Image (tube, rainbow, N blue to C red; front, side, top):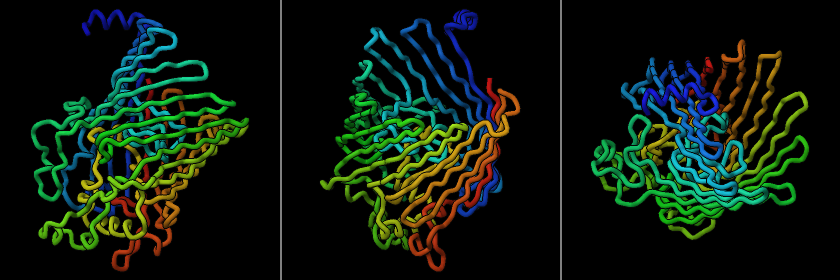
Amino acid sequence: MTPLVLLLLAQSPSLVSVTGYLDSRTTAAETLGDGAAGLNELVEGNVQLKLTPHERFTVQADASLFWQGAWFLHGGDRDLPQYRPMVVLSEAYVDASPQESVRLLAGKKRIVWGSGLAFNPTDLLNPPKDPTNPTFQRAGAWLGMLEFPFEKVALSAVVSGKTMQQYAGLPTALVWYPPSPSFEATLGWVPDVRDDEAHWAFMSRLYLLVADTDVTVSLAYTNLYNDAFQNKTRPGLSLSRTFGGLEVHGEALWQAGSSRVEVTDGCEVSPVQCFLRGVPLASRPFLEADWLNVNAVVGGRYYFEDGGIFSTEYFYNGDGHDPAGFQRLGTLFKQYPALVQAALGQSQDPGTPQQFAFVPLRRHYLLLSYQKPQLFDDWTVFASVLASLEDLSMQLVPQVSYEPWQWLRLTLAAYIPLPGVPEWGVTIGEDSYGEFTLSAYGTRVLFTARAFF
């Protein structure tokens, strides 16, 4: 885009809108494992651009540049990817409506059709979000969408290619792996997961407004897209309805089998011996199973007259471990966290750096949250509790925000893990761990300053 075009756009506020913020997040933490930083500084510069040359045509982009610094690192390697500068392109897409009932969209966009607040079982496309702060994750997926929206009915179809490799926030390989092997694939400890397969997803939905109830029926077909399933078809259902100040919802996804990682029995205590004997450290034994599996969430949200909001959700993770499987996985994780993270696999496009990265390992979870805005005019208090109902370990998140001016928000928050019932968690020698105390971090305190423009 030439400087002359940029100048013309800047002089046409009806055509162009530029907003953003500068954010500084300082974290002090109790470190319990290698790679954890006792002090971390994350600075984000964000720009959000919207161009509207026509009422039926929009171009939008949301990009952030992150600078990260880490001090007082606990053991291990000091040069870790999570503490390097990075660029995150959360969204960049073209949205066109050639006719009132036709919508075309292409680019990177976060599309979520499910009604869940903190958990979305039917969302198979996007980077995961933090259930204790669901709106923080804004990053989407590279896709194309065709939609036919009507007043009480909508039909949508989406095709997406997985990001296989990216550089400076932009994908350098979509759908297929690049030809040269990655560094991690040459280590020997981690099997080379690269293949010649196309990694893609197709999502379709039918939305209906029936008796004041939002009903969404979805169908997904994926091939090695954010999980290990090949040529997998999965139906989904989402419901939502409001009764005065109460909103209730439910969302579910059905599938055959499970993609969960199972640690080979005995390898959790002696992974080196398993490696030397050629025994796989972990596997996914239920990928081709034909038994029915479901991931589901039910919950509600109540709006008080004073502006307070109370939310609760129960999440059933059909891909979660039984007690024995969780014991093996947790034992291996406490001793060799890098091996477990490699076995679980991570997307090449993790999206916005999350304050709390949640990977559900068990089957039953409960989330409770309460928010009270405009407390003493410029203050907002927020608290959430995420609990694993199988060992009663918890993640507590109290938070308070203050806005001295409209353009500045100051936030103080804490992430406090509680171990739960020792007999129901992971036992290693004389030590016991709950799901939320397996992390390399103990209590963390965060101070955030965000200036908007």
